[in-house]
Image 1: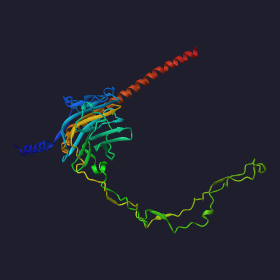
Image 2: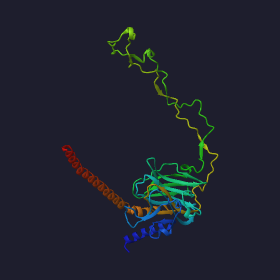
Image 3: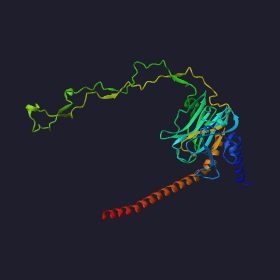
Length: 401
């Protein structure tokens, strides 16, 4: 075998070894037979408010055979879930990844998924079902355009304390949440890191490790005023004698003014340009300024570390639960794994492979819609022009009569 062939074979073996080392709990591409792996919930069904899931590649796409599931119709609740082999992420990295596209130009609604633990009645899965992790984009008006990362701990749903912005266009994007055994995390969008940090600081799961010393007091001689009045600056002599208003020198006594009837005439007053307000000494930099006083930090006596802060012991289901006024959100390529590199590879071979073609298809659709709108406007203008002469004719006939 030629040396070039050996090199290629070696790279393939390395790639295969990397993939085979990844533990994949769920890898859903929504190919044929997906209905057998997912359970549509009866939540809101009795009220006639439960939506449907369409199996489609969407109106614009990079590959018509690469299908996902899409919310339909408008103003409905949507709930669907899939079971995978139960696992515990202790001592493992946890990766949750999926792609989502808002074809409807979403103005208010979610595009997130949930990881559920323990036993769940999938036919009753809904908004009140407890979850371990909720992750993904949420858009509502101008104020909410963020990525949710909510962790279930101690019976509470705790949101991330950061504002991580999400994508808001009508194209497919990949969202990835990575949780490491050292309790650090990363949030990626389209395989690029958007934010990262620690469970200790970015969620209120545990009390803070350190707090401000409640017994500390600012020293009496602490100077926290950056500027002070100049002690050498003196008020000019006669400053307080300058009146705030003066008679208007341009004013003249009206010709019809009668002193006996109207009283003695006095010129109206105007603001005195020489008046500068109450005198204040100029400010100078305080030579004793020490900055704003801050209480020193001490160890928090209420803090008790939890080495398993990152652990979710019985992950077993992935669910999608939404309320949407305008439907059309399409989910695909859902992955639960322990290997961030494998997740990147999946994103590239799905979203990365088709994103350019999808964008072209979307732009072609937009161009087509713009042309149709322009044609409709032209037709309306033409109709208006043909109707106007008839009105003029009628007017002429009316004038003759």
